[in-house]
Image 1 (spheres, rainbow, N blue to C red):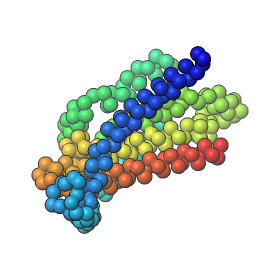
Image 2 (cartoon, rainbow, N blue to C red):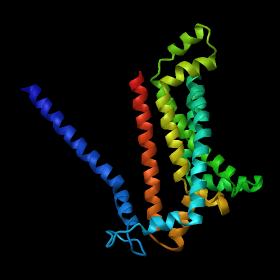
Image 3 (tube, one colour):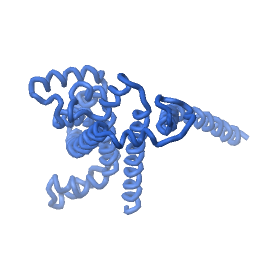
Image 4 (cartoon, one colour):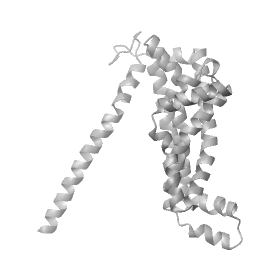
Length: 270
């Protein structure tokens, strides 16, 4: 009887957790459920629900040279940020994992600083530094700033993967004559590759979605898509922004699905 009561209590608790979790998820995706239908509206202003359906604002987006230039800038910056931040963050996480506990704890505080500090303060500091270096309104400046913002996510993600990794496997490879870099690449990296892939995804999304820093350091021919979207919402509110938002959501979802498929394939091969 007591066992049945405990089982019933656990089912009740599980039901409540499922309800709360579903409510939180619905709250998080609610803006998306509103933005996507608005992007297919034929009205000249943001309208929900749309009275007439049309691809008008997608044609406006893909037919605009300015929007396409900003999109190319953002995608190129996101790809370059991912290619730079992922190996740097993975190596930094590996170094922290192999360090002493005192050094690792102190370094982790520095690592999370870009996440804890208000982004506007970082943006102002970067803007003044770039003004002296001549990097404002350049693609290199955007990429460097985005790499600095993405590195903490890569480091934290890879560190979490290394914590569940049996480091004795690498030690065994090194004891058999493999150099440390070779052992790390051939033994350690394959074991934590899903964490590295997740870190790469976060770096890509961090760069693609970043707007506060971009508002200060990007501009001209190297204005990012988020900067142009913010300016468009400030100057004139039209559904083109909703169409662009829907495209960005689609890119993020496809990238996440790709990471999941790669991770499943990797686990299947093992």
